[in-house]
Length: 205
Ligand code: MN3
Image 1 (spheres, rainbow, N blue to C red):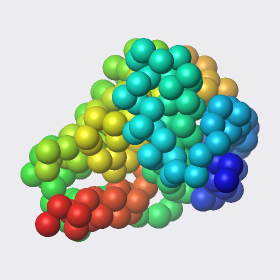
Image 2: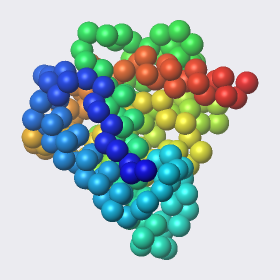
Image 3: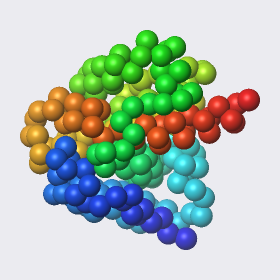
Image 4: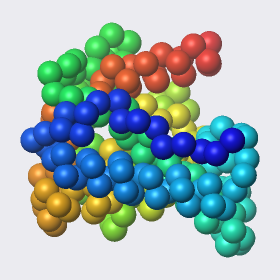
């Protein structure tokens, strides 16, 4: 069965004004689509995307074909996770419940976490991703370059946002800080993070 482009969990204009309809249409309809189509051209496989990512990551350094599959499979996975990490404005604006307790314990509170997310995203040199992960039982912020993903480094992602230029250039040109502030302050889906956090906790009891 071929890999498919998942629908966005909201409309193309749902993230305005932080992310415009034009950006989202291009980002999902052209960039994300292209990763899925290239992956289908490279590989016929029934395994879940996550399994393809993990399997090819091991050989990606020395094997050009494995690298091409990894890059497209991981970008397809990362983008699907990114769409779910964002929410139209107006939903739950802050972490709650068990996740909020852990944020207080591991970062000192939501304001500190937000600041650290912004700093990390601005520190990504070139193309990459900024993640909130659970690693070794602790919440951590991590960044990855290009197509790389925490799922191949033993870390469980809770939230991600894209800091490739294609995520913001139409709206902000080189002003990455404005995009990052808009996303972190207004669009992060803390309910999705909480869902991922509780799933991890349940799996490690
Ligand atoms: Mn992207």
